[in-house]
Image (tube, helix red, strand yellow):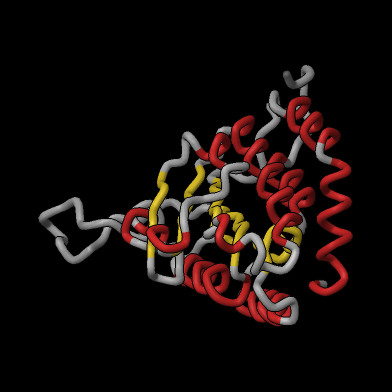
Length: 220
């Protein structure tokens, strides 16, 4: 609750969303530092439950490569969209309908599409230089603000990761860390959910150090 004379605390991100890209068990032994991105994804999804941030999750060719890893499934039970794809970008129709202009809602100007509100989208998953990159490019083209978590994305080949992140910075994405994004998403310690988020940050502090230690130097 705001003190007398102070404005009511509001979140910095007004329309956040979380994209979970193809974190499947078949990739566990192929992706560099897979266990580290899994730790970050778990933290981000725990925060999403508290902050009521909508989640969009995809799998790549699930019939052959299987479902999302078991560790994440309990945290994805309320996902807005859970879609399988062969397309590299996550912006398949099931997801895109929430982020791209919809059909016209008037007969006076039938060519005018109904705009969607701009979102602050955070992405975790794989692979940095393929699905994460193409998803980010599609979201940026649609006018959304995109955060790519350096401690939450990876590729089969370690060397691909910093190149992909450098490109995405140039394209206009924000490359940051999960903790930085989380505090920016809140924006104010006065919001009601702050204590619960601070508890998550404390409980995952060791995991955060582990993820950063495994991923940071090669990426930034």
